[in-house]
Image (cartoon, rainbow over all chains, first blue to last red):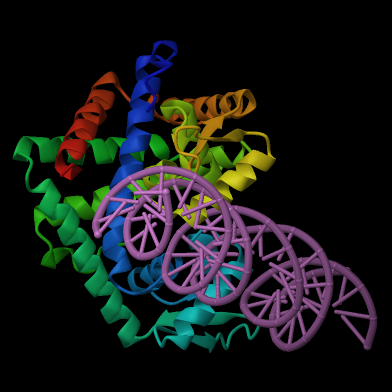
Length: 148
Length: 148
DNA sequence: CTGATATAGTTAGCAAGGCTAATTAAAACT
DNA sequence: AGTTTTAATTAGCCTTGCTAACTATATCAG
């Protein structure tokens, strides 16, 4: 993949290309681990915002997850019916709801997160300490490059 | 995110965690670029296999994309009706079809790929050469860690 | 060579997750 | 008080994943 026109790409573009494809493959493997939680991906991701970030409004959650409110409303419906989150009305602004993870939701999320991190760490542990340091530096650099 | 239980994680697990979240954010931003092609993501991805890998059977394409044949059959239907790919019957085995990208499909894909790579490269170009070298090394290390 | 079995692909039908447009209820602002 | 804005939901669409069931062709056993 991507061999044809390499000649037309400069070095930075080649790096961009490899970085992209590496990210795709990395996440593809991790997703298999997440499937073991039994929670569908969008739901798991929203739940994780709630567990790590605390209670938040529906619109806040939607924008944290970069989806539209109706999409998030339905995701929260599903999480709620599985007993993983809870809706409260915000008494300061009765139009708004506050969504929070239940104990059960938090427990399940921590489990899944642990599985995912251990899976990745198991792979990373096969590298040398120097290689891991390289990845660490690269992660910092990528974050720097991508934030505005 | 991920601040709560860091104490319970060792260094490699922390790295795994940051790597994971960096990959997610990277791809989320790139996806916005891909949307500009006007082709839905699964279709774009299948088309890219055809353009970079050449003609292939439906089952082959499905397994390259890690989806089931019925899913791919429908994706190919959509691409075909947009004139981006073409189905041929394999004359050696008349049960099988061979799917190939049309000129139009290839052209659109190259455009989109160029946009995506340039977008990423634009961000990477704000880093120092040393930082880009770090990313390069890290990409290699990650691939090594994740294969097999 | 014929009947059974295996393989390639499609069709039908379900679920998840994305969207916009329209609606409802509450808040905020003339 | 009446209008406008805002938070969330509902309705209805599309895409993309799946399994089960079907069709057509190929292969294999006797």
